[in-house]
Length: 488
Image (tube, rainbow, N blue to C red; front, side):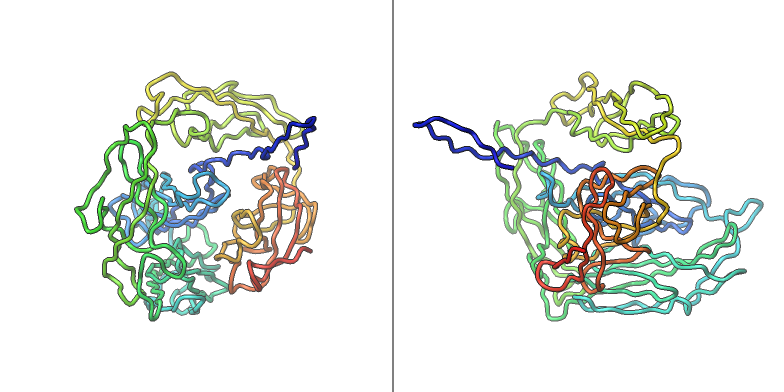
């Protein structure tokens, strides 16, 4: 857009076009879906509208190697999803956010008066550890050799993998593991299931090491920083940066004593702080297990922020077809009330405005301990009979440019409905029986759940606008520079 201003001589104006401020990425922005834990204690790989899951951790005592122990009664689990912040947000340089979630793990009871599951597949031996080299090395495993069916045939296999160093996919009974560009070690879980009622699943753990032959782990590896992101709060609290190794110490000076926090900034202005981190090199490198030191410079703010609606970041608010309001949650603060409480049913999708009352957190903000703030949110109330297409397809998480799909691998696994097919330019996309707000971002699309990106062949890309309409259809095979795409 250009701005034209007519001014009479001898006055001359030299003006810059105003820019729209970038939004802040918060945990609610990611819109995490399909996060669950099965009876074997395995955590599903969730789908995100924005961002990428870098890791899933937990402080629960029986959490180990990316999964929980089985339980005999339903148990609430406390998870932390580390989400990589995509470009296009004001805090992208922070690199990641650690977002807490609670999920209930169902009981695994195989005997007694009320078993939660019976029969089902069983394991047959153990799947050997796998070793790959970086940059697209692959290994295939015939899963039928490592599972035995129960009373009925095995219907399929489910993969549990949140590692960024290896990709895992299954076709029939063949599991394919492929490496990315970084070395390291991880555990991939695969479960066999059948379609009988109350059937148990069976799980195999696969230890995977990705080697980087001839490479020494350093502060920068193949263009990837060993540490990135992180922050220092006004009160001196340090949020560790993301690391491809393991951070074991933080220091104010190179080779100095270890610290856990920094001094509070009461200077009245932001200040630059450089910290030094000891990092243990991960497996797969020539110097695996050794310690290297890398430094990062942070900007430490001087004042506490004011708690407002942007920081509260309401998410999950919905209105049912019957007009009942689901209050959802706030990223920060607590929803104490909302108005109105419900609406009448409608025959077509209708925008509604709901006022939410948010209590600020007890500390950390200039207005902590003060009165509730009010935040208005516009929510679409779906018609009693939603009108969506019947074609089932799958899309990936969004990216800002088609070429982004060639930077790394993306899972195409979020189910949607379309009024058209794969090449349906102008078709309308729905998810969960309501129009999908695509935000004008780009999505990889397929007829089944697959993985796309480098080394995965040609795939299709859609651009979907905020009204769910497909604005662009193109194809990419990640050849050429920058992930060349061809509009269709």
